[in-house]
Image (cartoon, rainbow over all chains, first blue to last red; front, side):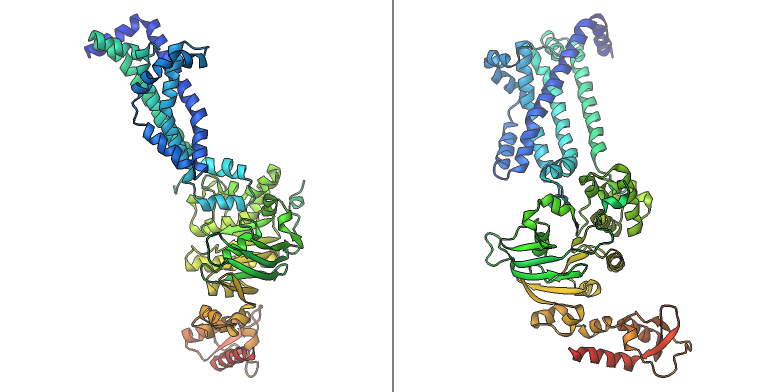
Amino acid sequence: MNLLRESWDYIQTHQDRFLEALRVHVELSVYSLLLAMIVFLPLGVLAARSNRIGPAIVGFVSAARVVPSIAVLFLLYPYRRELGDLAPFWPTSFALAVIALTLLAGPPLIINADAGLRAVDVSILENARGLGMTEWQVFSRVQVPLALPVAIAGIRTAAVEVIASATLAAFIGAGGLGRFITSGLTLYDYSLLLVGAIPVTLLALSAELSLAGLERLVTPPATT
Amino acid sequence: MPLSDHLPNSGRHGSRIEFDRVSRVYSGADHAAVSDVILTIEPGRFVVLLGPSGCGKTTLLKMVNRLIEPTSGTIRIDGEDIRQMNAATLRRRIGYVIQQTGLFPHMRIEENIAVVPRLLGWPKESISQRVDELLDLIGLPHAYRRRYPAQLSGGEQQRVGLARALAVDPSMMLMDEPFGALDAITRLRLQDELLAIHRQLGQTILFVTHDIDEAIRLADEIVVLRAGQVIQHGSPLDIVTAPADDFVRDLVGGGEALRRLSLIDAGSALNRNGNVRNEGLPAVTSDANLRTVLNLLLQTGTQKVTVTDENGAPVGTLGIPDIWSAGLERGTES
């Protein structure tokens, strides 16, 4: 309990630093997740709609998943200038971290979007066509709503991974709550380490819970 | 805008459907799924496509709403080549019901029923009014509007599927084994209700089944298919009493004498001689079929039943000999 008390005291005395780190951490996570959804959900749709390139996309993405997040970060590091130029409105290290986290969020988004769309019963889709829906109406009014629970499960996995991995951004000087963890480790100051670790855990948990709630909300009710 | 303005078919007859040398070959298949079918469905007829699985009946059905396109030949609805029409527009004019309902699990019952009116851009009040009418028509309480399909029984779901197909009062309906997944009692009840709806609305119905008893119960005309070809096209009585070949005879199968009885109503076999007064005999109305009458005789152990008109007034009696001669007569006359 002493440790927690010391951590709390640290936050009290370094409020500005803590809030800044928290803000950076949340921004890193939110931007990365949004960017990943914009880029990779359409790729998941593409995978589900094509029996030719679909399995190739999903196969490649599943294989790419074994690359650890920290490796992604360091693999991109040599190209930080070029990558940083892609988002000149952000500090280079922040841009680099966002790109790495976006890539990290890709696999669950693609895999779940593909699986969710493919799991929709073909007879339901054919019936939608039979009632006179256009291809776009079949997709937007029937297939997407029915795929949504599985797709949101993918977003949930991605969100938790991104929030947890955003701690690694501290290694390349992008800030975030990870800076307390790295400093804590170097200084053998566990209370400092917890100043980073506990809020990260709470952020990840709240993302998990709120997205799980959303998932339940969009799941059609079974017998009640 | 009154609701009737959205229902252009109200009070009109069903559509005529013509198949003109229609074939469909699937790539890789060694014979055509549908082969050179020439068939005309007259307006307002209830026509059942009957045959074993793989005979091409579903393919033939799905070509009418262009879910499957013919390899060759032409299909016309009321004289118009359906290839000249936009597929989605065509389908909105045709009621479509499949097995396992095909209801959308994420939509409430009212939304499921309203799918086609919504596609056609009806105003909200008209849709709501129509949903109530349809729930009345299929005998479900208005309280079901807010439920989801999974909260209904199989029979109720199939009723909703029927309501959805009837939403814009189409001049024709395509039904692909709609009652195939239901238990026997529910199936019988829904068959009766479908017949009542058909009598009331008069649309053309094309109905696919592999169940001969269902075909006989429902059809004005039965089209027997095998390997993509029409083997026989006639009334249920024709099919049962004069099967075109061994294939149809096998399909009609055993119990054909009983089936024949189920096609003859008590009124037409009536023994008008003798005493018609009700003397404690079991009574049936004159539109009951002879199979029902025979069943009643065997159950009650009586020699005769009294036949009454729809007002309950006795018009004659029926005994085993009458049933026997009626069955014999109909069996040999064709």
